[in-house]
Amino acid sequence: MNRKFTLLICSLLFFLQQSWAQEKLLYATEFNGASTNAQSNWTAVAASATEQTVTKTTDFSNESLTFKFLQVAVNPTGADATRFKYAPTAADAGGVQVTAGWAQAQKVVGSYIELSPLNSITKVVFTHGATGSSRGYKLWKKVGAGAWTEISTAFANPSSGQQVTVNINETNVALKFTNLNDAQNAYLFDLKIYGNYTSTTTQYPLTTTLSDAAAGTIARSPYATDYDTGTAVSLTATANFGYRFVKWVDAANGDADLSTANPYLVTMDAAKSIKAVFEAKNTYTFTVTKEGSTWGEVNLSPAPVNGKYEEGTEVTMTIVPNAVTSFSKWEDNTNATQRVVTVNANKAFTATFDEIPFIVGWNFKDQNTKTAKTADYYAESTNTGTISTFEPNGTAVNWLSNAGAFSPSYPNIRFWTAGANFATTRRYLQAQFSTTGFTNIQVKSMVSANYQAYKVMTLQYSTDGTNFTEAARVDITDAYNTVWKDLNVTLPPAAENQTRLYLRWVADATSGLLGNSTDNDGSAFTNIYVYADKEVINDSTAPLLVSTTPSSGSSTATVSGSVVAYF
Image 1 (cartoon, one colour):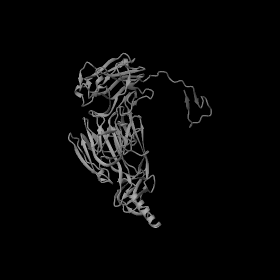
Image 2: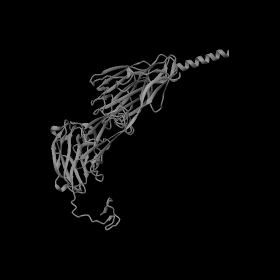
Image 3: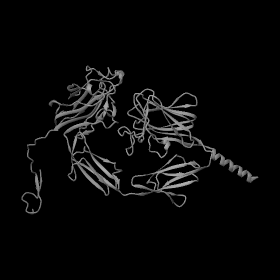
Image 4: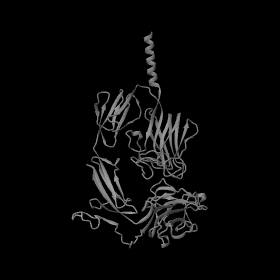
């Protein structure tokens, strides 16, 4: 009797183990073609005013998952390093790194990505981004024949990439993504859908380990800890810097060799414990010293890791032109702006730059600071200047940062006054800095516009911050929404040797309008530089000799000794 009862209990426990619902990652994609799971890979989908349909299959539950796109484009190679953070660049605070590939909502009303219902969804994890603030994707759910309900409405913050997790815990549920700001693009970089799955067959655990915990990582697809018998699991080993992948071994069988393939396909027909074996690679330091001007720029591709490269890496050193330096030479007296070096030992190089006489400059590559921005370039650390946008009453306000626009494409800033306030709130851009010790002051800037803007932009200067004099103006009608236009001027001698000089860019409100009268103010600015000649002080007073070593008249000085003079 006891034996029968024990067998009954064991059978019941086995049944419960096999039929207990488990949360599984049913579908995952990065909207590119890099996955070993064919269902996660994507080809291009063009944005269209008619629905475009793509059908995938989920892992574990083997359900059809249909994506419907309306005015959304899938670009498997889409990438924009000026707006989003890709490895090895660190993510912005509160954000995440993203990968190439995206589903991009177009700038039209009503764009969406709609997914067909799944039997179970426990949670959704997605990463979205945008080209500015107050943008991104909204997530909806629909249970059965019910109405669509908003479940995630937060803007992407930071816009360079934010991961969102939404708990759902519903059955027979569909998902939909819509644009939070129809006037701007939204970007979906990855999507993970989790759901409950009940196995009807034997499951086996898969354990993976590393030969060295610091050597790399192992990814598995589909992702789980336990798999139905017969499931094919793809294992991919990725080596960290300073290591190379060697092989897979059976950790449960004395580290017996399994394969050198990477990825490696495992069929789950028993419990398995698989180890990825790595070996260390030689690494070397790589140093580039800048002389002549600290503002000289040298780009290294690929980028070093903590100042080092792996042996055999081919590194391209490229001089990056900027507005305040000119490249002179390398340490070997060559002057090619690009050099290719194979790293086989510790390397050290020197790039010498000449500095163009200037005071301050802004290129607006920094997209995070939006007011009271110190100069991106400055000749003196005690005179870094600031630049801000202001309301007509003198209140400083944030500008709108843009990573690139018009031709040539430059990072820039815009007034971005709301369309409803455009006529009554004429913002201006103002910089301030010292010109003490400088003459021949030349201001160079580039202006353009899209959305709504006045036709003429003026450049004014002031020595007291109150009384401004117009120094130059430019009509941007022929540049509107296409190219940049120079707004340059050499200031009069009155601007020289001032403790504080003010520059103001402000539109001529009598010049007429460009664009749609309901749009925001799209007046745009970039590459603002102030060049000048540093005064040379003519010192006509000869130095006074105070003493010498040895002292005058010394009887202990030698013929081969040295003399030190003090003034």
